[in-house]
Length: 575
Figure 1 (spheres, helix red, strand yellow):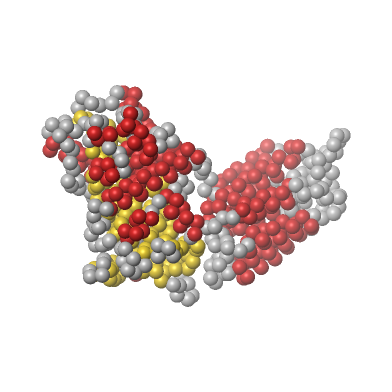
Figure 2 (figure 1 turned 60 degrees about the vertical axis):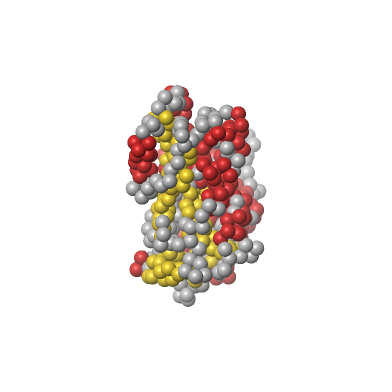
């Protein structure tokens, strides 16, 4: 209901300073709200919004044609001063920017026309030719209505939400600027904005009447738009390098075992980037070839969220601590916790490392098989614990034991969770793999990669790359689906020295500037839901996707493409 009241409040705030009669403009608006509310329980369409274009587009087309045609007399508007032009322009900017951002974030296959339509809408509102005095602005209103109707009914719109439709309505109902007193000088063209109120007898705008609409627009519209600053090219390049590095590291680690595996690529890359200044020569070149420079790291941490990157710690031998300036840089740019330990007393050193890992993983990960070498100088440690919070939650009452086929000869019983909703799905015919996107909180998503029955995970792991994930993401299409996913928890620590040496990172270990790299990761998948997450119900049962065989799961920060966790789940009953 709140999403219906906000436009009403906004229109009221825009109308009140300029009109002495509210009833005429409110009548068509109430008609709009009544129809929207009457259809909102089914999201305007029995099969979901914009999945059935023929029945979704006509009511909006009709309403958007009727609404702007409220009789408005413009005969008393002679010319517009610069001051009276500013408010409509500001309102258009404030309204159309969230529209573009919402559309970008919710439409799976964004083409050029999705960007052109809002632009055409603005041009129709602010750049049309002036209307003669006394002539209603019917042609421009019709043009605006048709453009919005096209935006609604355009093909391949898979997930255009109700709120992104309300924004064009707000644009159509933006009040016209009041008339300026007649005077000498060139007259400016009229702004042909479809208005809900008449503008006679308005002589000037007070500061209060300017501030209230702007404040309401900022308060009401901005929460819809996900108006986060877009990451720069340096940050995106850093994210791409780290993701590729993480996938190569995952492949190197997975080649040593065919069991469950979970790594935090962003944590490993963050910890290794922190030693770039400490290393030199060939060792530095080898790290930079994989990770790039360290300059964009702080920007990437800010874009992803420092808490989402996990923790990093330096366990450095006593007497080899970094100087104060370097230590400050480690703490500020990398969030590193620098601790001096006595590696001469191995039990005490291992105990210190174990306590830090337990603290970062909520007492879930125990270190095993940690080799420090003969004369350790620096142990890099990273840790990330992630509780999956799904935007389409799993219903705990539907969780039931089901079979999971570990391989051709072994089957285990797992708690199988169930939910239904509209999910993004794709299929790679070359790799014979299905790709399912599961929305998470904090701007993240889980990409579940499920090979066909009889297809081994090793082929899929070899094909993994940042570019391949991008290809899969662009191929996703929204569909109704019932998803069955095993409940599991992966809790592991991985010693990465051997895996890094397979990636040609050798010199930093050879000159003993780095002794060992430890990565601790926790991935918990259960019925925990994101705040406000809602599952869907359908009149007819949707197709079912049952994840009952080994699969890969990658957690990605969508705005930057940063790969936060990647896991191989062979047996959900194991850790």
